[in-house]
Image 1 (cartoon, rainbow, N blue to C red):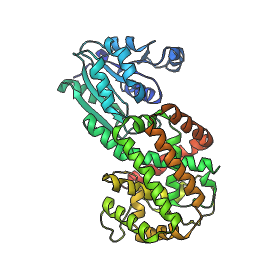
Image 2 (image 1 turned 30 degrees about the vertical axis):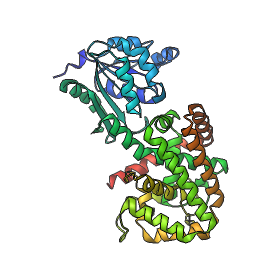
Image 3 (image 1 turned 135 degrees about the vertical axis):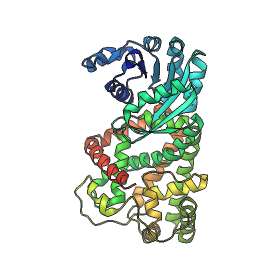
Image 4 (image 1 turned 60 degrees about the vertical axis):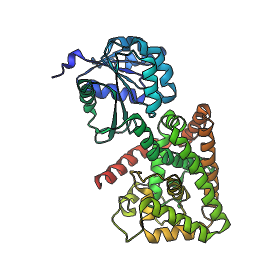
Length: 417
């Protein structure tokens, strides 16, 4: 039996995720020692004044010296620098982990800067700080730890009610790239294109129906988070860079086929990619996404007549996965919806060649996908931040409603799985 009164959990980095961890862990009865940048100490002290289980410190050295289990909740690009500052002060025999999205660089930092007697158990909650962690995936990485120490970390994190997934650092980074890199690039590019065209798509009668609602809601959910949540994965994950580059190439090549009216080549490429990713198309079957279910999650009050769309952004996802040989792991299933409904796929191909309604949108989307890819290829965090926050500011007034609708939409989808 673990004596909770004798165990202190340290959290270095009190951003949104750090605060969420601190609140959840302290609510379960554990003592939490926490810190952020020295200049944030007073504000944090006031914010958590009513929580007797959370103890604020001026810097990470004090947290490291006084804690039995320590979690670094900092940006992926900063992990090596922060661990080099506070790692040498780690309490003898402590268990150390982090929750960055790039585990290989995180583990490298731990091995380089922590004392040899320290054990390493890392984690990563695969959701944002505003999402209820109950039932959500929580990755646990046992890099170097005894059975007793690993069990202690599991017990502490069990307060989240999450579903534990056990991976190595390398497996985590590869799967994270496969499931998130391309989809993030797609939805970031959607927001960029709508911003460039000065559009709020949910207020237009061109973006109506279940698929369009999903696109709008997920785009807004992504831009409502902090920029570094996506920048770290995109720039520091070795697989993500390659995937984002291929996504931009897929978008560009498909768009050129549409512009040139090359129907036969476009159709062959789309169907080949679809079969490679989802298997041979057969009869329609029950899918997670249905227009009659998702129509209710529209942000706008527009006419309910759906406009035909070629869905370049979604076709390019599947084309990218096919080109790179990535297995289909997108949990939301929005791309599978297109490829498992033969009549809809036929309509999309017809629209891509014959209908110019979305040509200007697709042009801006292609520019956006290529721009995000270049930003990632250059490893330019400053440009990534500037681009993200500029678009974020444009959509910000709709974040509260989008978060509410998006959470409800996802609960409905998950309830059907």
